[in-house]
Amino acid sequence: MLDLKLVNASLFTLAEAAPTATAMGVLNGRIVGFDEDITALPARRTLDCAGAVVVPGFGDSHNHMAWFGQSLTELDLSGCTTLDELYAAVTEFAEGLDDDAWVVGSGYDDTVLGAHPHRNDLDAAAPGRAVWLKHRSGHMCVVNTLVLDRAGVLDRSVSTPEGGTVVVGDSGPTGLLEEQAQKLVTALVVPYPIVDLADAIGAANAIYASEGLTHVIEAGIGSGWIGRSPVELAAYTEARRRGTLTTRVQLMSASDALHPLESADDDGINFGLDLGITTGFGDDHLRLGAMKIFVDGSLIGRTAAVTEAFCDHNHSTGSFQLSIDELTQRIINAHVSGWTVAAHAIGDAAVDVALDAFEVAQNERPRKDVRHRIEHAGIVRPDQLARFATLNVTPVPQPHFLYEVGDTMAAAVGVDREPWVYRHRSFLDQGVRVPGSSDRPVASGAPLLGMQSMVLRQTSGGKVLGPEERVDADTALRAYTVDTAWMAGDEAHRGTLETGKLADFVMLSAHPADVAPEQIGAITVLATVIDGVGVFGQDYLDTLETSPTVHSQEHVPTTQKQEV
Image (cartoon, rainbow, N blue to C red):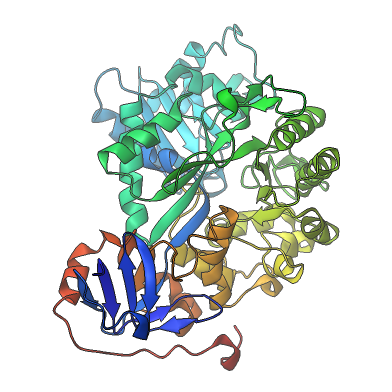
């Protein structure tokens, strides 16, 4: 007796042995067979899919779930196009708050506004209130005078953290805090209560399920300017206990949360978390992943470390978050102690540092199968491509950045470096995987939008960045399924629909390769299923139990279609 049986479906398994099927059986959260192997078996629930497209569940290899969930209750500044509009939004938002509540906003973009907000104008917009506005990149923020005073900036009672900048103008601090300097603000509000973080995670989970996401990797918890609480893992555990976290989550620990450890000499574990907990601890639903370390800053904010100066914004070359020696040693220590390492490196100079550190670490203690990562890999020179393959390091770029902030990135790097920005095809040509990811909430996290950007590489202004880096829709789909599962070390359990694997799948209104490239993001997610249980689209799934009509859809292989 099966728990679930799908019939009359357009199943695209993405498995090499049997890439398509029309029926699938599920028992105890696992796939038990396809087509003639299961069609005669009884099932507690049979769904006549009427030709609906079924693909493996989508993954996101780099997102910020709690951060995104919290942003849902903050003032959304992403639509502001002028500073006056932003200040007016702050005033209106403040009027609806309790007397002592902070005005917290997120998503503003200085390249759209023409400049960063200034603390004096924020003082006027929300008199007597603490105001904290987060840049869309997450790598900088602006606060008003009250917050600067509470943080000890105005009387200089607190020093600026290494790797951060308190921007100063003619009349003193402007309110802009870059990179590690944001800790001056977060120190006033962190740690957030576990109950609040669990609420945020649950709110994010509902949206993820509606977009077909069945697994995500959370890119940094526990410490640093990105951490929400030193006990942040407990918030994910609490959300799972409540039943509001259904998405599978792998959690990166911020490098600042790791510390020196003692172990037997033969063990070599000198850096990590207490009890020797390291990458891989957990289960299929909630597990510890890589150590996350910030090498540089943001391309949007021009704080990424580059070898050639940016073409705008004072023509700087960005900055490193720590000294190169310290960055290198942390990566080596984590590698030697058994961790997978995720190095945030956007600029090509930062990519050099990360690759060099991985090479030294492997020479010190070879680990053949470890899957180290470079988060973003935003600017990669031609001479750096082969090193990714040689060192077995995986880039994790965010394709939808090309649409949402591609125009400002192009202005930053100039025409000669445009082909180096958020590459894809060049990595594949080196035999390197490129898993799909979003960096949400920095950009929209819907996987289908990410796939569309992989295919088009078009900015919101209509410019195509690096057309030679385009991939076809089938490759884009594999990036968000097969490759995200592999990046998490879960390829034996998910990423394809095969007998014995987890019954995580998405039902779509169309296959991404069967619509015009500019329509991929408009494909409807009809239902999302995890462990054979619907987590989104339950009403739709209910209708399939009584819908016998079959409308078969034919998927045309990419090799038979005109190239995009």
